[in-house]
Length: 243
Image 1 (tube, one colour):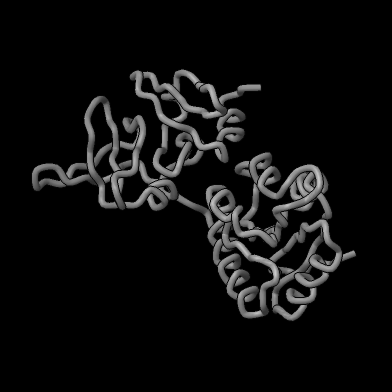
Image 2: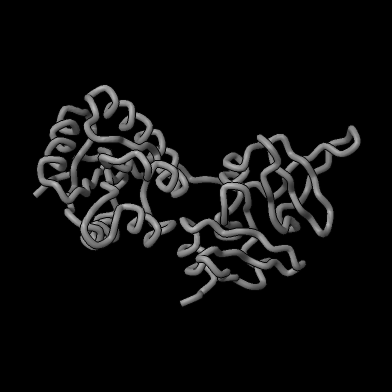
C-alpha cells in the first residue's frame, strides 16, 4: 500500500496495461513531493478510486475496456481532478481538452515530455487547491466609456473571434477576453460552458434539446437556441436534473 507524504502531490494512475502503469509509477518515483496513492485498470475502478481517494492528479488512459477515460471524465464532471490523458492515439486530443485536460501524452512518450506534463499538472493542482474568488461585475467598453456589467444580469456569453460577447437583456457587449479566461472568473455553480463557443447562466436555460442525428442544444428563456457539445452534454443533463 502507498503511504502519502505530507504536502505531496497525490497521484492516481489509471491504465488497463500493467507495464504502462509501472512506467508512469517509475517516472513519478524520481520526483520530489509526489506520492502514488493508487492505481486502477478500468473506467469503473477509476471512478470509484477517484471518489474514494480524492487524488490531486490523475494520469488517465483513454482507451480501456468498458468505460473509456473520456467516459470517466464525463461521469465525474466537476468532481474530476486535474487530469493528464494518456493514449496511443492522438485523435482523442480534442475530446480530452474539451474536458479541460491539463495535458495529453501520446505513447510512447519520453522522460522530458512526461516531466513537462507533470509540471503543468502541478500548477493546475495548486490552483485548484487555492481558494478562488469569482467576479460579480465585468467591465466592458461602450462608446469610449467603461461600464461594469453585473454578472447576475448576464444571460449567456458567446465567442466572437478571439474574444467574447456578453448578452444581457437583449443587449450585446464586446469584451476583450477569451472564453477560457471568462469561464475561470465566473462561479461554476451559476454558469456552465456548454460549448467551446458558449457559456450560459444555468438558471436561464428553459429547455434542453435533443436534435435528430444525435446533436444537442438548449433553448434559453429569451428564445435563443445554442448548441451543446457532446462532451459537455452528460454533465449539463446532471446539472439540470435530467435522468
